[in-house]
Every structure is written in structure tokens, then in C-alpha cells.
Image: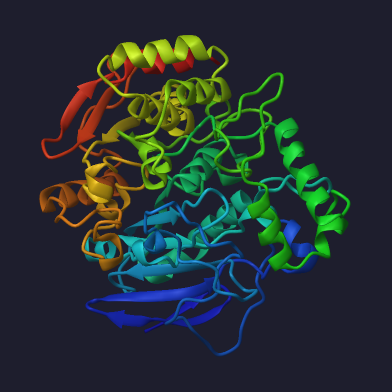
Length: 484
């Protein structure tokens, strides 16, 4: 199946009643000093470009999370320069006006791709949606704040991809006026950034923020700490010219060495609690600078922090000292914060308290702030189904909802005792409900429950018995709100 885009003709692959187009460039290859420049237009090509196979992905290190097998999420580095690309799944290239969903992958701003096995868009296409996944710059190339270079280059890549969608998606059957951009983890924080980016205004109608944060950006001062450390490790000047001479392999190796850097300053806590040295870099947090007038669906998982503790064996061995140290890193009044969490969970062991604080430091606080700031046409959810993986300890951890959203719970790489979903079959009714909710929201802007308002804060809790609750984590929300 051939489709003509603004830059040339692409040939996709028909699979089980849908058509897949892979490795379509939306911007020029970022090489040399251009790795630190805004995305540039890709040159047109002659003839028909083969779009039947995935292409290169952004330079990155393998991402390992203890005993958890996350290969289906991250995929790894497939080398090649022309990696600023999109992949498209469509039910019908001859159709008109189909809703469009554009997915921005997670991976701590240092890993992942839109080509990863989990993000196959076939389930969306079967439900009448044109699904697009995006590759963007990662690590030093994408997010290191370098004097003389535009900040947040990875976010600028996503803006360029959305422009490509606006200009080309009608040729794939999609409606450029009905675009939902959605992301998870780092990708969700990027989507939060898009909500506060004037250049992205008008490029999408709806947004879904899955386990992201409207408070997840580094201040320029925090970002400069990372830049100086990276330049020191490479023995180069902290400028575009200094970094331009370093090959991709050197940038990837250095990015891995930056893990664990202490970004606390006299005026800012670390919004990522030390888990990544990269994020958006903004003087004002996205939740405080919203400009997009869109429908918003946002939420978290009930036990986000478990992913960063259980696979490493540190959930069961956590102590009160660990809890206090985390609170001191994440909150200006750590004593009050810990007191609040212990009062809400009087029977909880230290590992549960540590996980709850970590999950809210990374995702909960920023999700609540985003929902409060966005106001009308905001819908909230919590994903609470507990995965039986890792001896039934993983629970409703970070990333567990993604296979439900993509309808990919049968993927072999997600199963087994160390797979994210464990050895048991996930409930098919919940898979259907979550996936169809995302599709419904993309079509209509209404996921099927009342909007989030200041007087109710209605939240859909997805579990074996799904239903709405009002302000389910009110005490914790207030504790984080008081810190701002």
C-alpha cells in the first residue's frame, strides 16, 4: 500500500486488515552539531520509500530495572542516523476523518522508542483509530541544557512530529483536527510540557498524561549542575562546540554515569528524586504555565513506586531511615510528609510507605497539580490492578497499565514470573475497559465518567471492580500542595 506524504511516497505493509507504515522521517537526521539544534526539515526522497520495517532508534544505553524484564518496553538502540521518525497504524488509508492518537514513549528521558514491541498500534487501528508512535532525541542530545543550544530538544522533536501529523495524517485516513497526544512516564511529562508550549498550540485537540508530572521539570540552575558534570566527565567545554565533537557512543556512556547526581538546591527539591539526570528544563513548571485549550485525561497507578523497589529487593528491606531520607530529598517538610503517609496507612511496613512517597514524588503530586491547574474538561483516573509478578509483590506499579492501554497483555515478553504482568492471565474485561476508554476519549473527549472539579475531584479507579471515587488521596494531595 502506497501513500504520498509531503516529502515523498511511502510503502506500507498490510497486516490482518490494517496497514502499517514504519520508519517515516518527520525531521532530518540529527548528526554532529545538529544533535543540539532544533529539528530541521527532512529532504524529500525520490521514488517509493520502503516503510515496511522499523528503522534506527535514538542512541541509548540498555535500561535494566533489577529482576524485572522490561525489554518489551524499551527495545534498545538500533544504530543509524535517520531516527527522527514516526510509525503509523491505520485501518483504512482511503477513509476520511478517523481519530488520531500520537504516542510519546517513556524511559526516563534516556531510553525507549516508538518501535518497542509493546507499542504496536494494531488494537487501536482495529477500533478505527490511526495510531502514531514517535522517536525523539534522548539523553544528552535530547535534554542536556547546553549554552548556545535550544533547551528541551526532545520536546521540540515531538512538536515537529505533531506538525508532520497535521500535514500528512489525512493521507492515512486520519483527521488532523482530532488528534490526541498521549504519553507515559517521561513521555507523559513531555505531554505536560506540550500543554505549556505555545509552539504546540493547535497541533492537538486532546491529551492523555499517564504517570507523568506537571511538576517534573528541572530549574535552569538544576540543569546546569548536570551540564557541568557531563562536560567534566568528557573533558570538554560545556558548550555546543564542546559536545559536538563527542560521538554518540561517548554521549550515551556519559549519560549513564550521570545517574544519581544530587540536584537539590537551596530553592528546589529534585522532582525526579534522583532517578534520572534528565528532564524538561523550564523556569516555570508546566502545571503553572498551561496554554493549551484541550481535553485532558490524566492519572497514575496505585503503587507507582513499587517498580523502583521491588525488582531490586529493596522494598522488603526498607527501613524508617530510608523513608526519612527519601522524604528529605523530595519535600521541604519531610517530617510532616512522613507523618501524613503513616497516618493514612497505620498498618503499613516501611517498604509500603517508601513506595507511596516515591510514587507521589515522581508522579502523584505533579498529576494532582496538573489536574487542578487545567480545570474544566479534565478527567482523572487511578489504575489499581495488582500484577502478580515477582512473587506477587509488584502490584499496581509504574508501567503496569500500558499493556492494557495498547491491548497487548498477551505479549510473551510481558509474561512469566519476571514479566511485568506475571504468570497469571490478566482480566480480559479490564483490558477491554481500559483500552476502550482511551479510544472513547480520543473520539469524543469524554472517557465515560464525570469531570474532575475542585469540589468533587472525581477519579475513575480501574480494577477488577472499576468505579469512581471522589478525591481518593486527599490527605496526600494536600501534603504535596502545601509544599508549593
